[in-house]
Each structure stands twice: as structure tokens, then as C-alpha cells.
Length: 69
Image 1 (tube, one colour):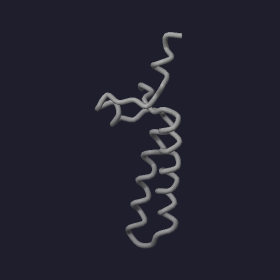
Image 2: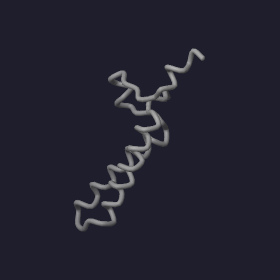
Image 3: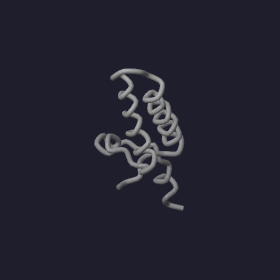
């Protein structure tokens, strides 16, 4: 897997994932399971690889700029 998620992007994904997962505990009824979508940003933050970024050729990682040093 190619690393294409930078540190700021990774932090935002972790916060967003935790907020979405908290909906499972805060909401009632069937709508609460919308919070399970929070697993996706947590997984992409943990792996530092986003499949959508790979498809469109984007990267928020600065490692490529410092590779020549």
C-alpha cells in the first residue's frame, strides 16, 4: 500500500471517526448505525493509505518532497 495520508489529514480522520462512532451510543433507533461509517476514517488513518486518494492520484503526505535528502 502506498502511504498517501499526511499527519494533519490523519488527525482529522481520527477525530472524525471517533465522533461518528460516538453516534452509535448517543442516538436511538436504526439511525444510530450511521455512526458505523466512522470505522472507515479510522482504518484509513491507521493504515495511512486512502483508496480514494489512490484513485484520483492525490496525496496529503509530505514524505515525497523530502525523499531527495
